[in-house]
Length: 129
Image 1: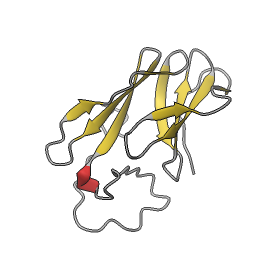
Image 2: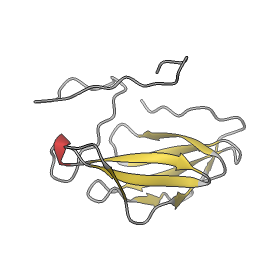
Image 3: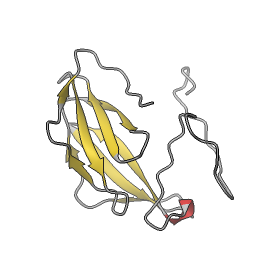
Image 4: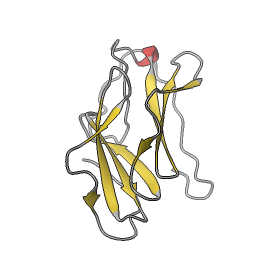
């Protein structure tokens, strides 16, 4: 991330993707198994997450059914675990982390039992290793 203008680098991926373990890059493919077949985008907004499907050809966003999903207060950072089975959200004002099971076939999110999890005050960002 460029800290001056908060921009992220963009990349075009073609062919076979290999060697991404531990790189910090998250790719979530569709149920078809093809990167161009679809992907998902999650955005923090208000007290929840809004989900979109990404058209792999045009890049256009389509709202996913069942969203927004409620999180804690002032969500601002989202990350997937290393297996892409769970999505976590840092909630600044409620000082906790919301956890969700990710459905790769629909993009849907289901709260994990026990979520949200206490995490202390002034949460900044999440990272999974």
